[in-house]
Structures are given as C-alpha cells and as structure tokens.
Image (cartoon, rainbow, N blue to C red; front, top):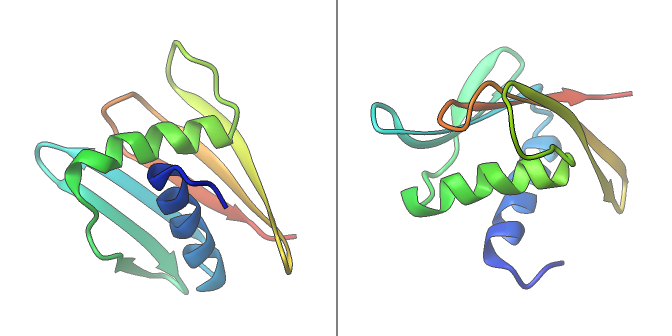
Length: 109
C-alpha cells in the first residue's frame, strides 16, 4: 500500500464500501454540505465517519487519477479497477464538475 496518506485513505474508502457490498459511493465537498462520504447498501444510504474537510478535494482528485481521467473539461467518466486479494473491485466514476459530488457505481461481475 502507498505511503501517501491521501491515496491510502482513498483506497481504504473504496475497499470498505466494496466489502460492505455498496452499490454506490458518493464523495462530496461543498460549502453547503461540507465534507461527506456516503455509500448505498441494499437501498439504504450510510454515512462514513466524516473525514477532515481539507482532505476530501484531494480524495476526489485521487479517485480521478485512479480512473485515469484526463485534466480539463467536465463531465468526466471512467472506471476504477482495483486488484484485491479476493479478486477485483470495479467502480464506474462520474464527475459532473470540479466542485460537484463525485459518484461511483459498483460494477459487480
């Protein structure tokens, strides 16, 4: 695992949501909503312990890097494919803008 704390935190969030059988993961950092990470399991939305607000924008950027999203125009979509000891965790990522929520949908094959 990486020594970079933002990357480690981002991978932990993705792994935890996958292990909990989440179908959707939402990362938000806005003045109105603050810093929030939520995920949906069996139709119910759960809030993760809120991270420090200063790290969430970096987490969103790291999600974009993991998906190989290019810099530049929005909206952006891509796939994050993480190798786990039990197989792969795949997420489809959608980013409407740099200041909007980042939505990931689990791809379970």
